[in-house]
Amino acid sequence: MPSDTLTIDNFANSLSASSPIVSATSTVFPLPADHPPMHEHSGGTCPVTGKTHAYCPPQKGDIRSVCPALNTMANHGFIPRDGRNLTFSILFRGLKACYGLSSTLATVLVTGGFLAIGRSPIRIPFISDLSLFRVQNPDGSISPSGVIDLYLIGLHGRVEHDASLVHRNTPDGEKYGPIKIKEEWVPKLVGDIEPRVDGYSPEYSDTDNLDVTPDHKRDPSAVSSSSESSSSSSTKTFINSPEYLSTLVDEADVGRMRARRQHDILPKQLDGLHAEIARGEMSIILGVWNSQYQPKHKGKRNSNGNGEKQGIPLPWLLQWLSEERLPEVPVSSSNTEAETEVSDGTTTPSKSQKTTMWRPNHKQTLRDVVSRSQRIRKVAEAAESQAAKL
Image 1: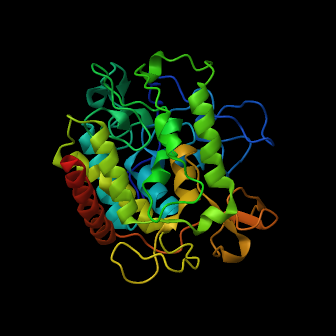
Image 2 (image 1 turned 120 degrees about the horizontal axis):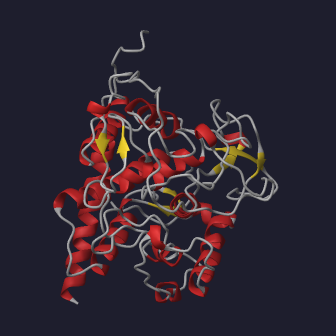
């Protein structure tokens, strides 16, 4: 196919010049024990994982966003690992390959994302690189037309929104939402799940230590607070203990999560569009993982009151939100598209059982996302109404 042919699957990916680095401090996570101390993702690739989709957290110079779905894609190499030079085609194909999204859903998400931050999703080779078509970013940097990086997606009030499940609200006067995850907020999600999760303690809800320092003004070498360390430990317990794989999270649980976060930011209210975006983000991952792991959960009904509870494993959700990482599944339950390299995973029914990285085995459609989002909205609005009466 000629390089200048414009289709959904083949917008041009090549650049004659790299887009500039947006001035923001990258969030660097500890490397797995078997990785070298530090390395760079030059050109968007990882010298450790190679061309595989094995997990590698962001390294020095990498760019990340406020979105766990996109950050996870970068951490697994479904889009450039450095988070730069992202075109429509790269994001479209990455969403389909990583999460199994339908072409329609991927198109809506990518096109909407570009337009929401004031960027065109169309990139024409050579022409888009001309100075005439270059665009100025909110921080003053310049990028070619049709090319973005992960940090730009966090432009406040566009796709990014307040009342995130694991991120602070954007401080007044800041253009971009905070990238740093509030570790002490992650265990709170467990408290929103019904029936009550064994091992959850309300004390996880009393560890707030609000820090409104913008991400780009933080000292990346600063030691984490004791509350963050304690919360991280409790989160790891829920992620790493095999028994929590039978704890499922459904639309009603997410509705309560959304209602709690909306209550947290009162008197501020999310507008209708951003409330829908917030619900849609979670409805997508619920649909992606809903049929992947369905253990016996006797006596625990779903939100409709009929049948056993259906949902996604709690460890998968917490790991995705806090580590921005895909889960490991037993080799015996993985499909033929699974990664060939096998390792001892952290979220397995048996610690001695071999695992492989989860891969999608069904297509996630726009219709399903809308349907799940409506169910989340119903529970969230009921919970908010109940809270208002107290």
